[in-house]
Each structure stands twice: as C-alpha cells, then as structure tokens.
Length: 215
Image (cartoon, rainbow, N blue to C red; front, side):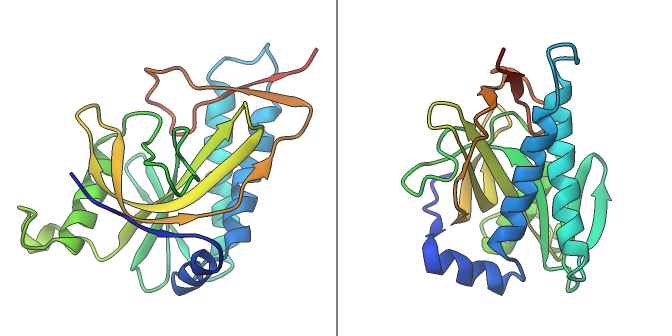
C-alpha cells in the first residue's frame, strides 16, 4: 500500500501526543524499563528470554504509566493492548527495524505479526478508508491501534522509538506502512551492555533482542 504518513517531530510530536492523552516521557520510560529487563539476562539464560522480558516489561511499564491516567488493560488473544477511557486509542509494543525513529526512514516491524495485529491493521484501514477497504461496517472496532516501535541501534548505541499507526502489512506479515508516525527521542545505551540484532526469521515475541554483558 503506497501511503505517505504524517510525520511529527519535536514540538509537533509533543502536541500530537497530548491530543492522544499521552506524554513522550511515559513512552520513553517504558522503553527504558524494557531494555533494562532484557539487560539482566546472562549467557546462561535461554537465548529467547531477553526478548520476552524486554517486550513484557515494556508493556508492563506502559500500563503502569497509563492506568494511572485512566487507561485500562485489554488483552485480545495474544495481543496485549492498553486502551484510553473513550476507547478511541489502543497501544501495544513491537520491535522496529533500523528506520525506526528516523523521520526520513520507512520503518517495518522486525518480525511478522499474527492475526490479531492483522485485524487491528484492517480496522485502522477501515477507519481511514471506509469506502476503499472491503470490510463490513460492523467489523470495525471503535479504537485505532498504535504501535510503540522500538529499535536498539548497536552501532549508534542508542534506543530509538516512535509511536505509529499501522495501515498495511507485507506478504511476510510485517507491518510496512503507517498513516501517522510520532517520532520520540533517542535514549543512549548503558556502557555496560551490547545489543545484538534479532534473528532474521524470528517472529515471536514482538521484541526480540539478545543482550550480552561485556566480559
């Protein structure tokens, strides 16, 4: 799907987040907590555990922040969402590729997504293009789903994030187009951790990253 997203940075980013009832620091704190949880793993832990812990702790931290603001948890199958009180906005977490957090980039999710994300993407399409998308009106939920995309850049030693609204998936099941991208600030890595890229064919969990301590 050929879509040019609306990209928000700086003051525009903060203004758009406020319209959604959000603050950039809440989202960045969730990303930092996820990275710290993953960094606690050692080579003796199962290889997949750091990704599971990072993904789960990011979601937990996001909920810790937002539930205090009147949001609520919503688990749709294996898709953990956090939904605002009017039920117009839902957030979840995913790993993005190297273009994540770069306004000039065109990010994709790092791994393929399941049917629940596909359904959320279809619903976002229906809300944006009710005539062009061949779905019945009763198939649309009230909320738009946004992904908190996270990418750990080992070369730049920074954590880049953005909050983006997905509207397309490629043939491999990765989200590859967005109607809006809200670029958040980059967070430097702690000097004690090295972050390795995710295995190319891994599809679960959403955040997949190996973190190794320096010797």
